[in-house]
Length: 469
Image (tube, rainbow, N blue to C red; front, side, top):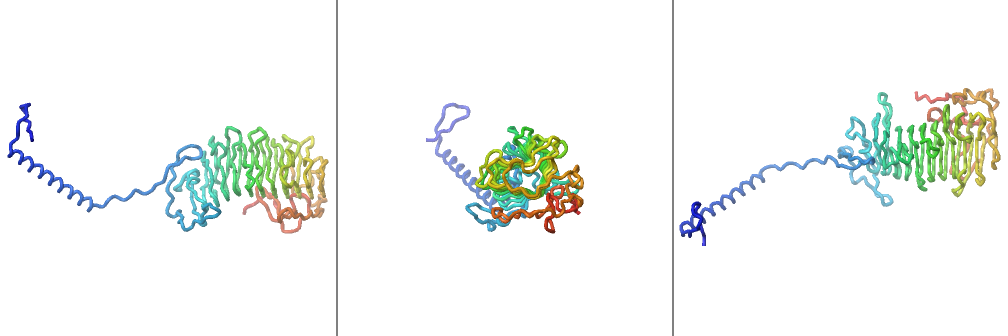
């Protein structure tokens, strides 16, 4: 039964049949109106064009220094199709990589963003200029990271300014094959005093035309036994925390180290070059502590290994922290083979009371030294068991200008055509002990066109400094 409430009366009263009919008619009309409205709205939505999906603009990720960064979507021109991917050894690599540009006028402004965006096979090109606190971790394979220099802004300079990736370095590198070119790393410091311009942890890393200045370690590597490190035409200076445990270059027990055409100087108490690698090729470099330098060893192989030291200029300053220039095996031999080949180096000892050119711990399988030119008071062989041939001591007058590190040998030195051919060795994997090049300052080499005729690192009278013109 239906009831109708009178607004004035509080007691309900019965509703008659006419009233009921009117209510049913009103409800039916309301339902028809609602249905018509729904059909009209549906027709309107169907006729209208829906808005397009918003374009993908990127995503938010966390940078190595802990900050949130925006990783923009790659431009269409940088996209790589799935068809270019190939599976190699269970890992996906790209046979055709992209070029990702970084810089103030590029779509990507920070290197950290590029590192988060990069894929295997890419090339990262960084515009010249300063990049403060732009730390990064690189884990991709077959990656090239290249600084683009110009006349107005110079080169790419990475300034740590208190930042570090994983509290280790400006850059942490662990990729199967990475090449880094034309970049300067400076100011790396971390709480454990092992901050590096680059911390190299695994894979194969090549460094070309780079500079490492004023870091606690210039470059510090792990002891990954399968890793290889190649350094070409680069500069390491004023690195070290001042504690003697950090160095211009500190390489752990990796598989192989190759250093050519590079300039090492002014380590802060630590060594100019220290390597625990099982195999070392140190060829045609300049390792000079110079005026005011406080380096310890100029070159150390604390665990021995195979060391081929050919055509280097190695100088100990008057203010050195250690009397020895080159040390081999001081912390005990750990490699299967431990042999030192010291060939055609110019060794200079400026320590007033006289230093030691070479210290070798007993137990090395082979020590072979040919054609090293010595400016200093002591002989090269001081109680070392090995093969020592044609390693003369000379005075400063034998060089063009030794006070300015110009160690070209003058014609009246009496050294012309005193070169003695070193032995041919099988374990060098194709490396000849006879010098093929000579160091040219700064951080370059020049190919020799003829057979060597002199002891020492310099074979020609061509200019001592490199002229790019």
